[in-house]
Length: 86
Image (cartoon, rainbow, N blue to C red; front, side, top):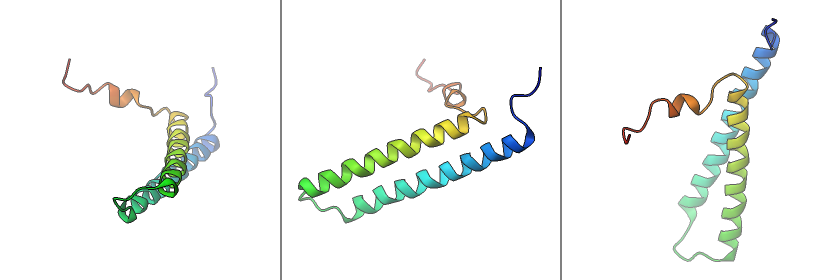
């Protein structure tokens, strides 16, 4: 049975994963900047901005998970370590 991806495909997938990780980092940094400038008086504008930032972060996280999943890396490697609670 042939490999599901050629070497070129693997490089494309790796580049996609790198870019997805960078994008998630950028989006998360935007959320950090929002938090740093946030005051204790939170109004509708701040709530709306937060909603947009959280939606962007969720989309970027999903993109990153999918991109690394295509490389065979997933949350299963984290789950396998356990939490020590069992």
